[in-house]
Image (tube, rainbow, N blue to C red):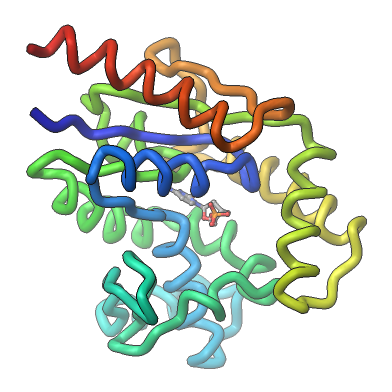
Length: 226
Ligand code: DC
């Protein structure tokens, strides 16, 4: 018996870390839905589109093909029209435009349809902003992740440093605040905490502790389904 697990929350809350760990432990498939919005953003940047204009981006959409596949021994990495882009979609240039791209209804409709197809047979752990509210409203487990803003900015800053991306702490902090604001105030599918979520604040939890907590929720649900 497999379930779908939806993990939503603000940027840099550790959703991906938890989602990957849960998927590995349960032998489920992990899908990073944010990577798909980043993939569309990268496609637009590569095409040299003016990022303030909606129509050229919508015209480009039918030519954007996104796929998750293994790369260099890692599972579920993003490919854009056949080429590996997992690293490039994490760059500040993409981060600077992705919230706008993700606010466009036509982009969301297209990506949500693809995400729903992936979940048809259960056994998916998907993280994002609208997974429990829009993509899988009937997910058996919905987790809303949160952490204090300065903790999240520090994590994202450390990640950037490790990857050699040149960015200041203040820039990271400001980018996160701005994305939080756009993600939770946009008209279409804003990040929303509804009462069917379990809230996981991991400001003071390490990855092992957060995984244990989430696994205890999974166990309780699976016992009830049997
Ligand atoms: O999780 P992330 O930082 O990679 O997400 C990138 C952007 O995409 C972020 O601005 C929120 C948006 N997003 C979304 O609107 N819906 C999702 N399901 C996932 C991400």
